[in-house]
Length: 153
Image (cartoon, rainbow, N blue to C red; front, side, top):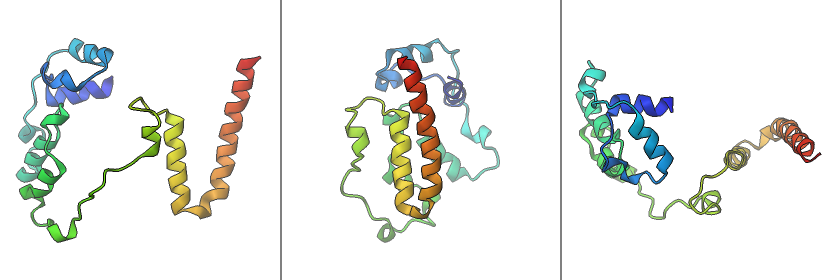
């Protein structure tokens, strides 16, 4: 909740229209109960910073994701012009397919599932760490299974 308050302190209280993308009624109600805030001018928050960078931040940091600039718009922004080379920025033509997200059909993926996915990726890139990580995983899983067996009793 604190993080949400901090976001609203900077971006201001979202309009009803900006809240439309939030489907969780409890989350929407919590936001609406927070004190009303005005958006803070980024030029004041980031005084002395590169004006183009501040302008880009203003386009990216919007409460409503539908109002944010797209990746392509961000890359085309003048701030990135010295780094931008369309020939060096291939576009992914196929959407990312993250199996663990599909398995939950739009529901929140449990923390343990995400941790296991990160672990599998880590092992793919650093197989030499397997022994150390397996020992940690066994201790962690052992504690979890013993707590589960205690609950069953």
